[in-house]
Amino acid sequence: MKTVSIIPCLDVKDGRVVKGVKFVNLRDARDPVEAAEAYCREGADELVFLDIAATVESRGTRLEWVRKVAQKVTVPFAVGGGIRNTEDMRALFAIGVDKVSINTAAVRNPELIEEASKGFGKEKLVVAIDGRKNRPQTGLPRLEVVVKGGSESTGIDIVDWAKRVEKLGAGEILLTSKDADGTKEGYDLEMTKAVAEAVSIPVIASGGAGKLEHLYEAVTIGKASAVLAASIFHFGEISISEAKRYLRGNGITIRDSL
Image (tube, rainbow, N blue to C red; front, top):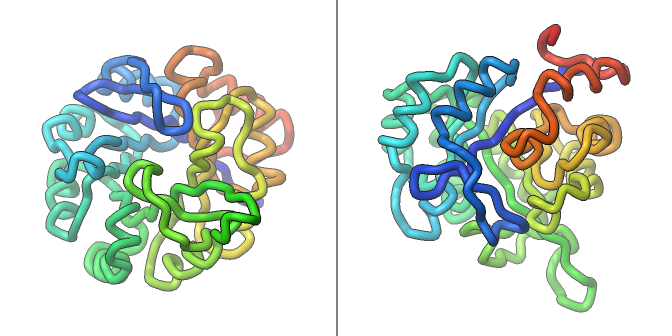
């Protein structure tokens, strides 16, 4: 049986952790360093830090924000948002980041996946995929890849893209449903399962966690190898230790004994 990870996500804008619904209507949550320290104490298996405005603002990742968090984390730490090339990745690794996550840049330049995987090792490379569901009459894939913070359509089928990024050398896929993001109505299980069953690398489910049952469903129905959440952790609705106890009590093997 696979070992499942619990991963809090720090969506950072203007130096603060924020959280929205369907990628918009952001509200302030907390200081990123404070959040990172708290989640490490509480037993997070990994942390993900996303500079969510970087691509939209056509800039690189704000290294000063990342550096402050990197100095405090005690678990594997992945960073995404504004990473455009291997030089950007190298700069992040130099300040203590364990993994990098690329999304829009990977769609624009798929060869970057292969270059990064060969240069740094696939274990250091996460490809983030943001997806949405389309109605049949649109002529677009039912499960479509979107980029630039979910604002831009690509016409690319999610499953096809997931298979391609695995072949190019991605070590993991971070899959976020734009439709479910921040709704607390549950992960998009159809999307998660479709991707998880199409690839052999780990798939991290993201977008929509609102209660403990949603985490369980992402693993058992969605076949995810890890569950990422933000709102439920940031606003104190569910603790990481509570999530781990619940999953273990329902037969899920988790990374540690919390």
